[in-house]
Image (cartoon, rainbow over all chains, first blue to last red; front, side, top):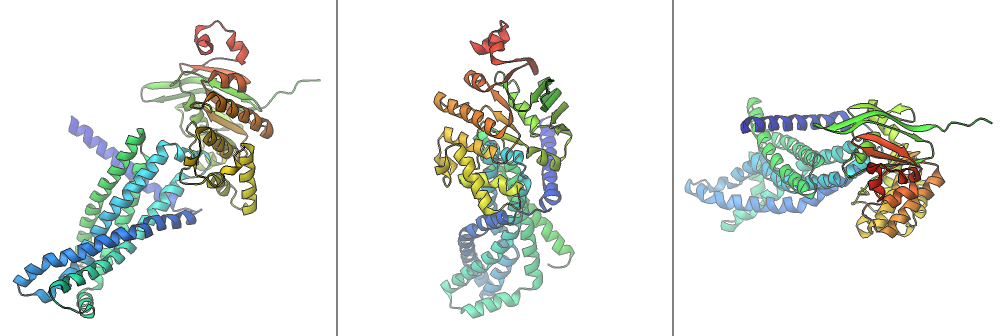
Length: 256
Length: 247
């Protein structure tokens, strides 16, 4: 019985999220556009997330290189280290790790911010003033997350590769030119483009889930905490599901 | 000389609203005449806030009609509702000021969205005038978190009035305030009503507020309009359901 109730709740939640997402296209994309608020959100969501993304990307590149080296030395292919790390970072690890960091920072902040606006009736105050809160609060945030995550991923990939270059130079000496030449020589258009495209979907998922959870927050301050937490959990799970689908699609298109 | 009938600005007929199995409003009727202050009195949880949220379209009633300026609110789509809401002000019990914005931005926000072509100087003038009306011009560049409860209520009142609504719905305007500040808010409500010729519905169980502001008092009991009359008429009633509010 409990299983049926949980399944019904899951279906309800899925339906509600789908309807909420549908409103983004039916309401959020129509004029009049909140350009000023969109820029403000791009600054908050993109620019202010850059230090965290940069730090984690740098450490990720450095650690990945240091962990991979012994295995490659065993097989006598240590010279392929930049190629291996470059492919791993650009195709998979860079987009997914950046998206997860982004979900943790931005998903929770959107969930908590909109949740607290909901429980303090600020969203109702916008509605009664004749302002469309979905357009002002949701559409701008979802657009900002969708646009900013690919940019952060590209920057994160670059910083991660720089971390990897330093990692290579801990045990041997390689010039920066040679390192990046090897990396870029091994990368193809079909490695870069799908990984950037999927980050658009990651960003969209983080924005929609954060806004949905915040918009549907209840039970006072406790509800705000639950919204922030569940926004991170759900958007992280969605990132992996989208990643799985993206791999299947690129496979079908022969891009792998 | 014949008497002129005063126009009705809000007419509510047979309003029913429930949540799940619980019926909150069960055939509620009310008429608000132009320029009058109607106080809806009732116990906590009797559905007073639900009533005004139905009037502004935040809640959809199960049945019945709510005509504001002869337009039925429950039958409206979102765009029609937005248009109708420009004539209705709503003062929230929690004030609901945008806490990430300064007081100036809080007041500018509805102005800039309603009157798209409005000039910057005009916005400044209207914001300053609204704050002057509530004696809080000095708070212009402060954040809501820097103000006291009474000041927040006055700013919220200024924001409610800035679009010059013709009808104002007050959700417990004096609840949570000390008696002195509560009296100030009541005076302010009356002053602004006189100045702007508005009609109001005031939700309250603060009997001083009821006494000082009401032209007509409506008692909401078990989802229905139990009785309506002036404060003095209700005060003299021997009905136990009414008397309990005046004791």
